[in-house]
Amino acid sequence: MTISPAEVPTSDAARVGPPPLVCPLDLRARSAAGLIGFLAQSTGPLREEALHLGADEARSRAAFVMAELNAGAVHVVSTTWTVPLPWFALVDPDTRRIVLAPQNDPARQLSWRVAMADARRRIARAHTIVKRSIGENGPARVLADTGRWLENFHPHSAVELDYGGLVQLVEDKDLLEDTSAQDVNAIIDALEAGDSEAVALRYESLREFWSELGLRERHG
Image (cartoon, rainbow, N blue to C red):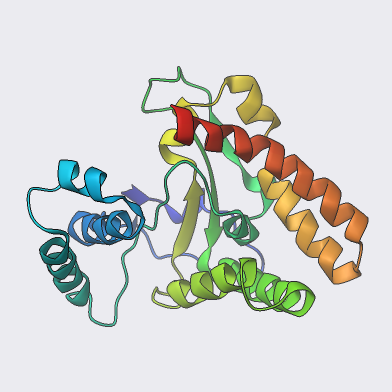
């Protein structure tokens, strides 16, 4: 995947480039990470149906591949059926990019791009506020892990947050009306201000949108 620095919104304090910006797909490492996650969450019968070798051997092979990364990190981190809500702290909600192609068209997308320096700054602020407000676990841990992951990359690189294949499951109207990035950033501001009512209202908006996709995971 290759983009131009001109396609990345930046603050006055951030720099992106020189071009081009290249993101290796890291398919081998991502597949190994996905397998480790599958083994951690799947049941015995499902594992037996999906794998042609034992779970211990599969886990060992996947761990060997992950060890090849040494001190580096995969360039693409993904989840299924949802976007971890703390990830939205990375981005400026106003920089959303949306392409409303047909639902089965690969061109259909929803994403945000942010300069690495801005992403690190936003994550650090969010982590400080969330940790102080609700403790070190849950969202604060996701923010801390995300911050550590970002440190693996060049300070003049960029980050993209996108919905991936989820855009094929959501109608145009719902994509256009989705306020997840606004809600998460507003929650962070409300936590900083001690406004519990605003936090509750924004969280309810997030719960309504993402719970529907969660139901598809369980019943689709």
